[in-house]
Length: 265
Image (cartoon, rainbow, N blue to C red; front, side, top):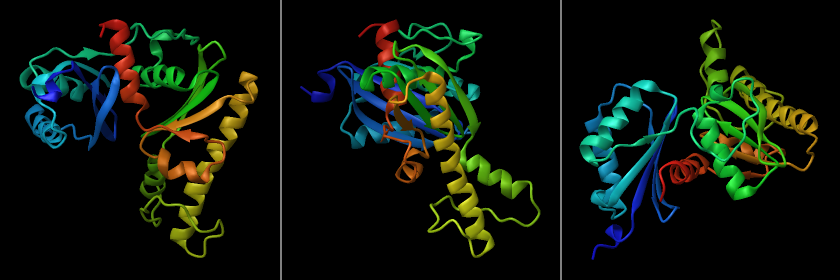
C-alpha cells in the first residue's frame, strides 16, 4: 500500500498579499510545507502544476488529499484556489471567513471585522503556546494580536510592513534608492544606503519593541509570550529582544485546527 494513501490528508492554503503557503497535514500534524510568490495573474492550472511537483517531491499522492482549507486576503486568488481544488483534487475547499467556529472569544467593536488570516494564526498560537500571548505577524502589513489569560482576543495593532516601509521611502522620494532589507552593522550610516538601512531596519526593531512594551502594559500581562510569524519574522527576530520565538507554520497549523472545529477530522 502506498503510505501516503494510508492516512486522510488535508491541504491547507494561506493566501497572503506577498506569499502563498501550502501545507499537507496527516492526522492533524503538518508533514510538509511549501511557499510560493503571490501572483494574481497565474491560473489555477499553473498553481496546480507547482503543487503537484511539490507532492511528487514529497512522495505524496494527490489522490490522498481528501480535504482542503484555505484563508485568503486576496479575493481573486480565492477563486483561483477554489478552482484548483475542484479540478485537480476533486474536492470543495473549506474557506475560512467571519463567523466560523474558532474557540476564541473576540472582543472587537465588530467581531466579524477581525481578519480571518489573523484569527487562524491566533487559534494555532493559543493551542501550541497557551495564553496570554502576543502574536506578531510580519507580512505585507505587520499585525500585533493580543490574547488575554483566558485566551480571548482583546485587540491589537496594524502597521505597514517592513518591505512596504522601505518601498514607500523609495517611491515617495526623488533620490532615495530601493534597498535590500538586511540588518545594518551599526546605526550610524556613513552613506545614503547605509543610513536608509539603519533607519528602516533598526527603526522597525524600535517600533516592534515599543509596541510590545505598550501592549503588555495595557494587557496588564508583563509575562505574556511574544510569538513571531510571517515572511519577515526570521529576519527581524534575531535583532529584536521582545520576540521570544518564531513559528513560521502558525497559519497552516491554525487552518488545520479550524478545519477540524468546523468540518471534522
